[in-house]
Image (cartoon, rainbow, N blue to C red; front, side, top):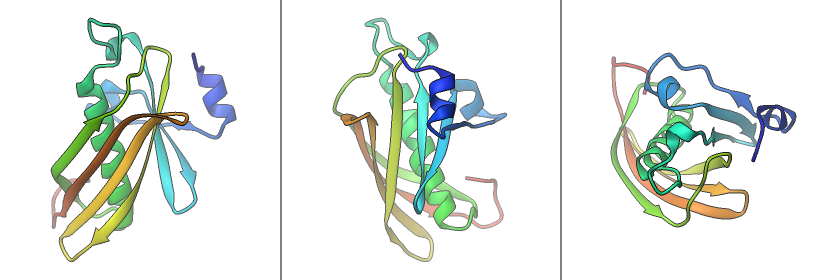
Length: 141
């Protein structure tokens, strides 16, 4: 089980969101080279009836984390997920800290291709890849 104090000591910072991400979190972030890594401190509200973290929560985290990596890559201009593929590889439980890292594969004028991995340390939980569309004149991401 990971504690908030341990995460803070490792350089993780809690994110403050007033929208959906704030409701389903707590999400964390820390800068790692050119990209930020994202994390989820798994709580009871995230589990399914089998005691593992719900697949919908894993999908939400993947979209949140990789979407923010895409958003940073386009200088925080508005963008939206238009396709996301998720492969469940392992399971997480309450008290675990899921980390998400990703990269931009290709960026065009309006489409950005990215992929990432969600893991518990060196144990994979899910792989993700997708396409994000750059929007003009709309919300944050």
